Length: 435
View 1 (cartoon, rainbow, N blue to C red):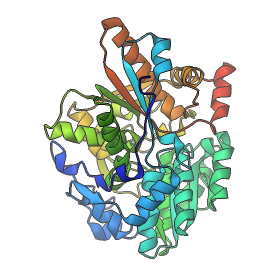
View 2 (view 1 turned 180 degrees about the horizontal axis):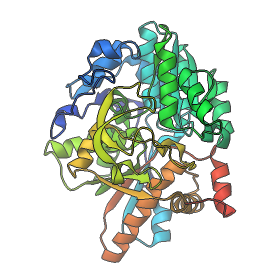
View 3 (view 1 turned 30 degrees about the horizontal axis):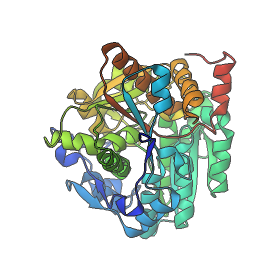
View 4 (view 1 turned 90 degrees about the vertical axis):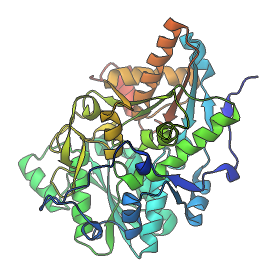
């Protein structure tokens, strides 16, 4: 029998994170201070981040060692994760392409997010922080950070985008089970939230607003730091355990992906999955692989945004970063893929898209849910709405191969399960879902 899944042993788990910054085609432009518009230094970031993460944010070391305590926690919550062959989907599509997916849904939190949540909780605990404040869209990041804080004995407050807070109550319950305080954002807990609610009591929220609330909370309490689930360099760095495992797994079956696909909200899932392979390409150690990021048409930063400096949050509390953006005050429609409702993207990923090294496509949520339903029926696993965007692109690539007869290898990151997103699937099945 040909391979159905490729497993790794504990000793195969990466012991270092891969940092793409030294391999980029050109240096990233520095973040700018929101008030002075001058490049920010470590002292500007110290009030909201622990120093070790600030060092990782700007590090030019290609590999950074993973602390033993973090490795142990990775193993505890499900690393290394399996690589599956989607043989039934291949047969259903009648494609000559081989399709593989990396099972990040098997973590305790149900997604790839613990890879950075655990690391961030560890470094904050080590520096004496008592509480972390964060935002979450669909709730995957909030669940993961709540898990990380529970593992390392930290308190956690999560500002959950209001539309997702209402759509996904079980995500909130999971966070609360881990011990976190969860608030619908915009909330009455912060000045930013109160101001927005005064202007619009029915505001549906956005990741930009929730980030503003979390940063304000951290800035006002010396025992609290801010934790971000995507976009920043250190976050993408931690996620590269995924892509390093993928390389090892394809080496086991003597294959190389022709195309690597992932959904994109802020960029951590897709980047962590493909950066180690892309790094090999940038260093001329391999060639041929394409990299395709998939976003929603309702929040099309990579496909229709402007490549410019913008704030990472709605209130303008964060440094300005050079990225593709649809505007920090943009409020996207209330789609079910809450993790993809962010106005910008990771600077390193944006640079690679700008240089045409990485491709970007966009789909509406009806197309994505249709792909998710197909995958659930055929492969038996229900994907998160975010992951379903990637699956739609995978199906399109496989059907192109069917037309051309090309026996290409397609790999994608199954970034999270949809077992706590069933209301979205119910809306789709009942014909209530809008594009």
